[in-house]
Every structure is written in C-alpha cells, then in structure tokens.
Amino acid sequence: MTEQLVIMVLLSFLVVIAFGIILLKDLLVAVILSGIYSLTAAAIFVVMDAVDVAFTEAAVGAGVSTIFLLGALTLTRRQQKQQKHNNYFALLVVTLTGALLIYGTLDLPGYGDGQSIANQHPQLAQHFLQKSEDEIGIPNVVTSVLASYRGYDTLGETVVVFTAAIGVLSLLGLRRRKREEDPELDAKRQCRQQNEEV
Image 1: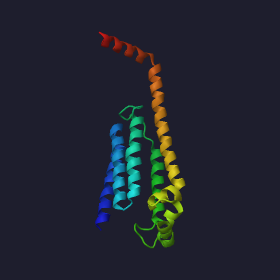
Image 2 (image 1 turned 90 degrees about the vertical axis):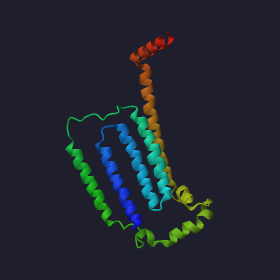
Image 3 (image 1 turned 90 degrees about the horizontal axis):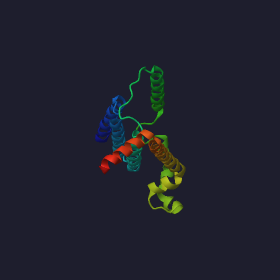
Image 4 (image 1 turned 180 degrees about the vertical axis):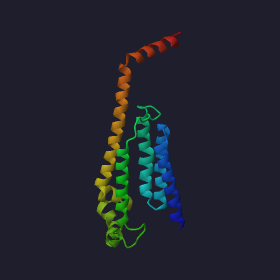
C-alpha cells in the first residue's frame, strides 16, 4: 500500500512537471524541468524495484539528454517565440493519439499481476538465472541479459544516443563556422582587441 502511494505521488509530480514544461516560455527552465522529469521517473523505477532501468533513465534521460538539450539551446533564443495563430489540427492529432494510447493500455495486465502472460513462463526466468553465467560468461544476470539476450535492444539505444550526440555536435560546429565567417563579428573582435591593447 505504501509503495503504491509513493508511486501515485511521484506520478502526480510527473503530471505537474509536464504541464510546467508545456506552459513555460523560458526554454532554459523547460530543459531543466525535463531533467527533473527524468529524475522523477527514475525514482518511480527505483520504487518499483527496477534499479537497472532507473539507472539508465537517470544517466540517459536526466544526464545526457539534458546536456544535449542545453547544447541545442545555445543555437536558439532563451525565450520561446510567440505564435500568431493557434494550431487546432495539431491539438486534435495529439488528443486522438493520446486517447488511442490510453485505450491500448486497457488490455494490459495489472501492475504486479502474477497471472499475467509474462509471468506464465517461470522456466524462462529460471533459465536466465541458472544458465546465463555458463552461456554468456558474465556473473551478473542483469548485465548478461542486457549485453547478450537483449543485445540488439541495447545496441539500438546506443545508436540513438550516439546519433543525438553527433547531431548536437554538428549543429554547434555549424554555428561556430557561421560566427567565424560573419564580418560584423570580426569587426567587433578587432575593436575589442584594440580596446584591450589600450
């Protein structure tokens, strides 16, 4: 009962943080709130005894993603640009997609349901626990599952993070090149150097 209460409180925090991200016009604060959102999600995973998932969420969601967003933020203005028109079509698409996703969760088993399909194969869990060290050569079961049995999944996650890093770094590099080619910035630099010499 206490665990579910803590999860409900943390989920309430997630909803409040999500609305804060949507409503704020300051992009820096929105990026910081997205990092807090990821840390709160990681706390929920810890309460649910999924520490490995929590670690990944904290490292990738709160750490790497926040750094990438802060890097991308250097390419924009800090304040969000005011829209002159409301996009009701986008609101309709988002609402319908959200309703479909919620409808899709109605068939999912309850949290912790021992009779769910995933729990109907106890021999699979026993196989991982008993034979993973012999088959993979790694004593830690979680590591062996992530590195071998779910290797393609882990590789896909790594490719996504790597692609995001390359994208942010290339955007930052393009901006640096544009600054170097800007004659107005060159004039300002020369003026600054002359003032420092005096």
